[in-house]
Image (cartoon, rainbow, N blue to C red; front, side, top):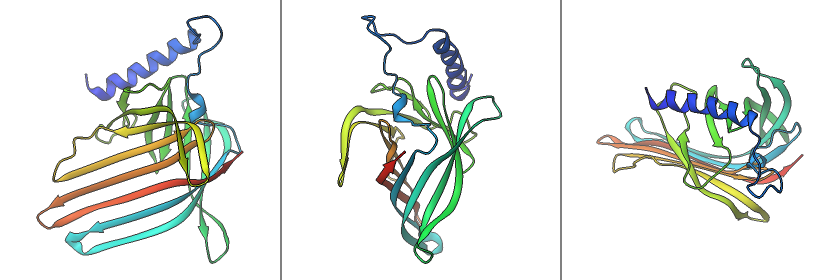
Amino acid sequence: MTYRLIARRSLLAISALAVLLPACRKDGTGPVDLGYGYFPVQQGAWAEYLVDSSWSFEAIGVSGAVRYRLREVIDSVYTDPEGRTAQRIERFVWDTLANDWRIKDVWTQTRQATYAERTEEDVRLLKLSFPPKVGERWNLNAFNSLRDMEVGYAEVDRPWQHGTLSFDSTLLVRNYYPNNQVDTLIYRERYAKHVGLVERMRDTSNTQVNGTNGWYVRQVITAHGN
C-alpha cells in the first residue's frame, strides 16, 4: 500500500474517531485547544500581503521578477461535492492604474476535525494537521496526483513579528525534501492563530549543465481583519 493511500485512509479514520470522541483535557477542566484558530473559516475574514516573485530559466534565456500586493477574502461558505462545509476564497491584486483591487483567481478551503485542506490553482493540498505538534509530519500532496512531499511542524505556538504586526501564537510548516547540489526545494508556511497564513516562501531550482532553472516566491502579511 502506498504512502499516499495510507495517509488518506488514516485521515478518514481519525476524523471519524474525532467526531465520536470530543477532545478533553486530561485534568477534566474543559476542551483542549486543537489549533483550529490557525485556519480561520469565518466569512468576511481577510488578509493582505506583499508578494515578491522571481524566476530564471537560463537554458532559454528567460528571467524576471515582480512585486505586487495581494488580498485574500473568505467570500462565502458552501457545501462541497463531498458534503463538507467549505469556503470560497477570492484573491485580488492591486491594480495601480485603476487604483483598486482586481480579481485574480478563486481558491477554496475546508477545515475538518483533524486536518485543513486548500485547493490552490486546482490542486488539493493538505495544509495543516490538528492538533498541531512539533515533529508531526504528513504528505502535502495526499489528495492530488503530484509526487509525495513530506512536510511537518517545525514550530508551534511561537510568537512572531513582521514590521508593525506582531502575533502571540504562530506555527511553522516546512518541508523535508533532501536538497542536493542539483535540486533545491524549500517550502515554508507560517500561520498565526485567528489570522491564518502570515508568511509563505517557496524556492524551487534545478541546476543542470545548461544552467539553473527555477522560481522563488515570498508572501508576507501586511494587514488583516474580519
